Length: 342
Image 1: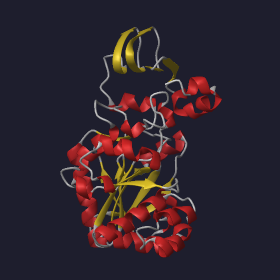
Image 2: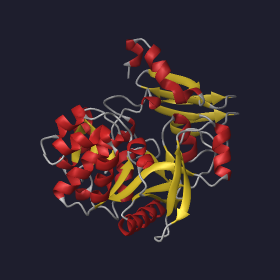
Image 3: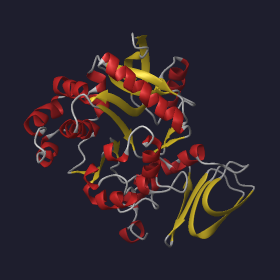
Image 4: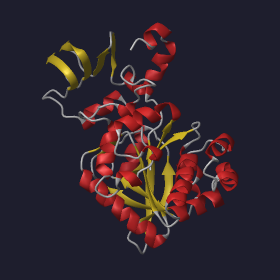
């Protein structure tokens, strides 16, 4: 199950409602969604891959990943949180296969340096999910105290060799993040593996925000619109994982990163000797740690550092890497003729 909704406003002006982040070649020459499916392909075939996205993106996604059957690209009637999305996906897998099927849940906008290590972690999580009848998450070994990620604390070792999860912490400040690194916390990646039967049982027992609607509409293939209209928005972390005693974690160390901001590209792309990363033509002199995307033009940097420069379709954005994490504030303030120029 690949979650591929949203626009990714923090990648404006490159990301637009018609061309969202997951369809952009941000890390290499392939869109993030295509890379996601290629990583999974050795263990999950395209015909057993479901993609949940916005209704407006269905055609674009089907065109981008033609190997995935068209009926496997599912339009979410409205954004209702990851708990509802994954619960509906689980019922869909049950209808098409059976409730003992293993369900792997990933997002379409990640970068992974070691694809084989990623697959090994998924298969290890599957073994635990089956052995323990557990909801398994892959916790990433942190490389820095990043306040932009959630964290989880591994607890006691189970008979399957996994760890229980003692607690979840959502986006701490940098000081607390540094302390948690020392205490052995892992990043909460959002990678989940479980049997459909076990996940749905926990949803029905623990998640009243969606359980009644799932009972009413989950067995009906035509009930998706009614289900999404009725449910209350809640994330799977809050609505299920934090409430369950059946959560396990296996650790992963395969170069995972959430490509959430322009600054993130400095961590996942090859940089020049001064730490600059670029798509397109860049000449940099006495310039360091800059992020550049240039379409149909060239960018020259001289004596500047920690900038983001995006040039596309007659519009150029210049900001700092720090401010680039908050582009929504800028977008909301822009006049429509600039916001929609590209």
